[in-house]
Image (cartoon, rainbow, N blue to C red; front, side):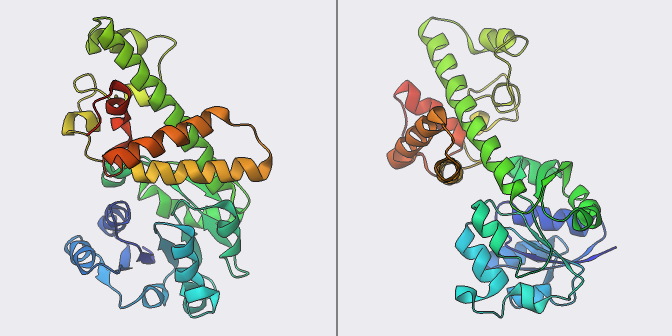
Length: 296
């Protein structure tokens, strides 16, 4: 079993760290939140005194943090001035960042060492169940070494290419997901206006050309998919604020690459309106309420 340092015990990081401990790995975690540290300890995760302390002596060091600035500070020290996890960990340790950040930062934080950018898909439900998808960029040998660690937290692990490729895959995937969810919400909104039941539309679309993950796994209306957030008053899941962040990153990447993404740009604007209208803390599938004109 491996020694693992885990930094960032939030809604995603906490169940991921717990799953690693549950599989028998020796996990030491750190988070700025004392409550998160307590919850991790209850799940068998040891307490580190700082991010650097979590990294010391670990075979694998994992971070799951909100944004690129947090990742850079954790790995390279405040302002990139040193003293972070990259300096504290053993030279042979495999460094893994599971945050969703911009591609440039993902490529810059390795501090001259092999590092894997490994953002995830699957939301808090996937993190709890250990069924996440990992999109991994970086050195092939480091990926091979870390694959059993990913398998303790997820079901699908894909090596997407060199450093930054994992982040690129995540941004493309989530842009597509946002577009699909808006289209799914529009279809159910139109069906309601036409007197068609949720169940009837789901039965048809889920077995024909309208089928998508947004429909069959994360249906934005209550009933057809019992596990979807629509059945829990749109408690996240995957919060709108996080989808908005990812869409912003996707459009930054599109601009830098010279790629035309008009639907991605429209999705960003619609999710910005939904967030500003009070939906930031709800699940991103709740955008159907804005499309209906009933967003709270």
